Amino acid sequence: MNIVVWNENRHEKTNETVASIYPDGIHGAIASFLKEAGHDVTTATLDEPEHGLTKELLEKTDVLIWWGHMAHGEVQDDIVERTRQRVLDGMGLIVLHSAHFSKIFKSLMGTGCDLKWRESNDKERVWNVDPSHPIARGIGEYFEIGKEEMYGEHFDIPAPDELIFVSWFTGGEVFRSGATFKRGRGKIFYFRPGHETYPTYHQEEVQQVIKNAAEWAQNQGTPKHTYGNFQPVEQG
Image (cartoon, rainbow, N blue to C red):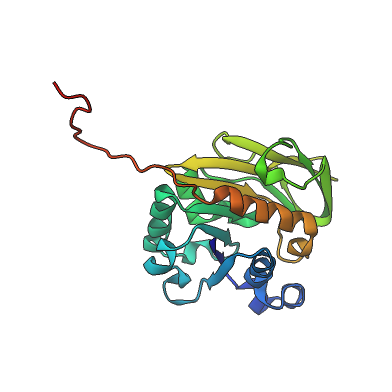
């Protein structure tokens, strides 16, 4: 499938720790394991013209993966609307970590998408609460991330269509860390792990979840419905 990995690509330019962990950018690291899985992968970043998300690129994109953190407000509203419409038309969307505050996710959720957070080397235990779901394929009862930023409830999102993962942190907090939503003809998956100063996207289980999610989010020929004034199906 055609996958686009979008990333602000700002931390990598200003933070030596991030640059050492992700020398090709967070987008490069994610694109690498998706390419190894056999997908056609393109990357796009904030500072490119149209943020790299041209109408032509989005039209041929099956799944868009979005990572953002420090520059949500710099994303142009017309690009957000262009992307939102593609999701409604059937493009899959995977929203990672701090992109919970991205304009595209908030516009599709219709809520504030706020949460508790703490950057303090917490261990995260990610529990698989829907083991039969395709996104959980190859994932056991749980997996652990040795050091991560804590996200805690309440997570201000609509009730998910499906809850796949729930995280526990050493500070005692819990979080809905893997959740699906449907909007129009498109499917959306939010996945919590991935703070920029930790090598989370190099971890096998995290990569497996993202690969599974991309396959799940790809549109499988969902029919297009007509709207507005409609002539009778039955005649006479």
